[in-house]
Image 1 (cartoon, rainbow, N blue to C red):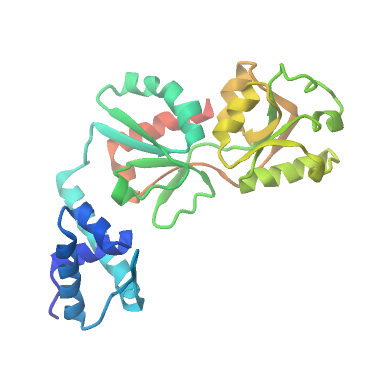
Image 2 (image 1 turned 90 degrees about the vertical axis):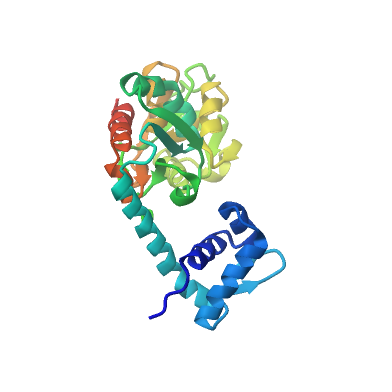
Length: 293
């Protein structure tokens, strides 16, 4: 079987991922005309178009979509082979992608402990609430909250977690033993699905009309929620892992000792072979200790 040029396949992969010949050219440091030429070579080889060319975007057609996963997997295997021969890439640099809340509340305040024990490793954080593309971003490992079922990736659970109702002890009215009074306080509402499940469960448990709750903030980002609840701006349902330290310091209280067990928790996520790298293994050991302390 006559194989198409490897260069054309590389250009095809980049253009397919970016849905743009221009972006592919920038990634590969070639001209857009060179990208178009390599795609034409590949389409001539298969005697069929592979892309739908539109004004602002270039998308794979049915034949292109059929080809794409095979080419993507082939280049990933080449990369794995190179890594197998050359060893761990950038052994002294660790790039971690984590949720904004996890980065700001847990990683940044504590990373000096990791670096005291691992002075040979320089750590870079990439705060992001979306799962990074490991191939494109150079990320070594990510921390995400979910079920741990990320396609093509391996997930290692960092901790068991639940969702709790918290407030600053300085918030006027939070010490009331009457649930209807407490739930009249402003709710700092995380609209993420597991928090919404916890809100419904909490209202049901304390016989509260969910529609009557007064939300002063609504967001999917836990960071501003926790920052505002620490400032005494209201009550909130949050991941215990994110505020356990604040509770131990007396900066927050677990109102009514309420807890909702969610199937979602925090995971360390990466392609399988990344977990073979010593720098990732050392970070995983430290992170598990951080989240369970």
